[in-house]
Structures are given as structure tokens and as C-alpha cells.
Length: 100
Length: 251
Image (cartoon, rainbow over all chains, first blue to last red; front, top):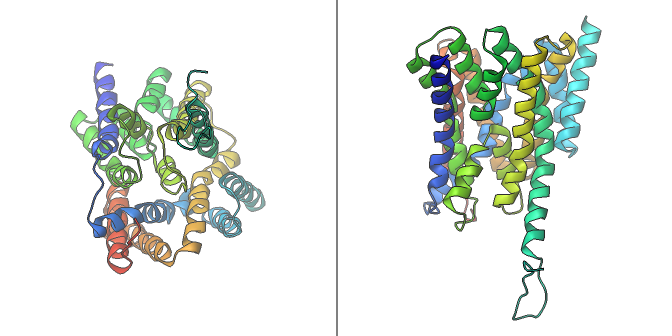
């Protein structure tokens, strides 16, 4: 158990350090290039996090694709996060029922 | 009311500090609600997997409450269960979590320089892929109470979901579990799409990141590289190209 708790502590440490170290950095970065770079991080990260992982998120390529298309369609119409998420899940659920 | 603050020059009363605090906190809380709901099925699965793997339920919850990461703690926990060396567990978790360096640095540039170090330390703890995305795409200023509100719901959802998974220890009906697997990704889409509609630069950066991440998934050799690294490489490359092609003067 000591080994497990030590592992949990180390995991917590390496989960927190990458988050807190840059936050402790209080100065505003001056370089326009670096500022532009950091400005684009959310868009790039969202893209890289979502695709192609979303295709494997339901266990079936077909239902995941349907869910993704529904999410894209609703997001394009400006629906809020919750609506998009719930509608995608319902679409996947119905698709799995049809496939079964 | 001792906290009432009046603007002496104009003579107009401005919002009392506590009211502003509450308003920011409430806004954050509202923004965090969908994230919290999205976290429940994921953390439920985590609790389940951890207990099935032989960990006590309280350890599963402890991991969730101290780590607050999805991929990182899944990987670390599976290594604990497999009896891996501490060094391996730590390095693997670190690599998966290195992307937070980028996110945190990006978010830090959006924060007021007046925030104290302890406030920043608390805010940093709650940075996840989801809270980072919501906060950094927020149009109003990201204040301490806003961030506190934003991370409270997801933190509770993550902990509760883990506890349910660990205690119930039986799988949700298969179809439901699989359907819920898409919720966080759908949320990412809902966050990304309005921005790429508005900005061509954001569209190019996002598509580039998607392209690189696809290469890491599907191309031989590249698909041997872990998810942690592939997300970092995709993000850094796409942002470098974005900053070179579309430098911003207003950020």
C-alpha cells in the first residue's frame, strides 16, 4: 500500500507541476511571435484532442461518425455545449440500437 | 454593508465587491456544468477500472481528487495495477501531462497580473483540457472567482463519478456507456466550431493540428508514439505555423 500511495503522490505531483509552473510566471510575454503562438494553443489543442480520437470514443466507428456529424451540425448552428454533447450522445445511442 | 464601494469621482455607486465576486463565480459555475456532466461517465469508468484492477475504492477516489486528469491518471493507474516501477509510472504520467505546460502558459497570458501567487496556485490545480478550453475562449476576463466556479463543478463531478464507479463496480448498460463516451469530444467540437467560423487563422491552426494528430494515429512508425507526445507535437507545430502565417497584433 505504501508503494501505491507513493505512486499516487508522484502522479499528483507530475500532474500539478506542468499546470502550476507557467502560472507562477506573472510577466506578460512581450514577443509578438510567442504571444501569437500562445493565442493559438486552444484551437490547436482542441483540434488535436478531438480528432481522430472521437472516432474511437464509442467502440464503433459508425456510431462515432454519426455522433461527430451531429455534433458538428449543431455546433455550426451555434448550439451550446450541453445541447451539442447530449444530442451527440443520443445520436450515438440510437445508432447503436439500430446497428445491434 | 461594509463591503460597499463607491466611486468617489463620479459619485455613482459601482457594484459591491462581493456582488461582482458572486457574479463571476456563478458565471464560472454555469460554464463548468456541462463539463461536470461530461466527466461523470469518464470518471465512472475510471473508478470501475481501478477497483476491478484491485485498488481499494478510496484509493481510486484519492487518485481522481489529487490528479484531476483523464489520460494521465488512467495510464498511471493501469501501471500501478500492472506493478510497474515508480519511475516508469511517474515518467509516463508526466509525458501525458506535459501538454498542460502549454495550456497553462497560454492561459497565464490572459490573466490579470494582479492575481496573487496562492490564487494562481489554486487556479492552476483546476486546469484540464476542458476547463482550459472554456476559460481561454471566454470573452470576459478570467478572474479568480470565475475560475473557482469553473473548476468546482468538474472537480465534484470527477470525484463523484469515480466514487460511483468504484462502489457500484458494475458496468453501465453497454450502449449507454458507449454513447456517453462521445460527450467530451462533442463538447470540444462545440467549443471549437464557433471560433473557426469567425477566424480563418483559427480554422487553419485547428485543421493543421487535426492533420498532424491523424498522422500520429494512422501512419506507420508515427503511430508508435504515445498520445501524450502526439498531442504536444501537433499543438506546437500548428501554433508555430499559425504564429508565422497569422501573427496577431492585438493579443
